[in-house]
Length: 144
Ligand code: ZN
Image 1 (cartoon, rainbow, N blue to C red):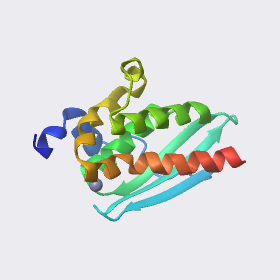
Image 2 (image 1 turned 90 degrees about the vertical axis):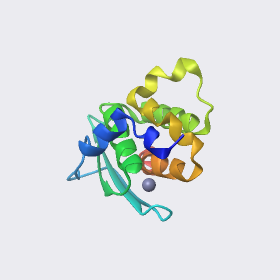
Image 3 (image 1 turned 135 degrees about the vertical axis):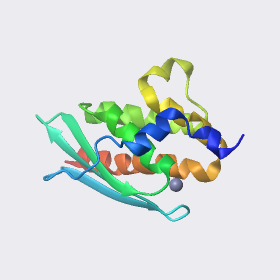
Image 4 (image 1 turned 180 degrees about the horizontal axis):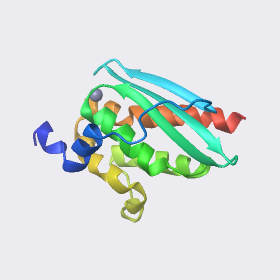
């Protein structure tokens, strides 16, 4: 299977038209991560609205997998609570390990498009970069 075959329509679309790109003016948590293997950069910021629902934005550059994965993550995360985001993070991590249960596929929406990435160890880092930034942001929020 060639790498090109991974670049499904969803991934290309999110790469060309990233959702939630930008910077939040007064974020409650931020994280900036770099993937030296590929040169990908993602900075993520989260703002709590009404003390519960999260608003997310990301900025960055790098390969299409890293940027599209962050865009899909933002789309899935919109309006979710910290604990709901924890659950999404856990499910996506399982997807990357090939351990996701069938019953949990729906919750990941478009993120399922990254399933094929798990076969390419170096690319898992790309797909996880935004989600690792989410992990750091959630840890900051949970300490507040
Ligand atoms: Zn990459």
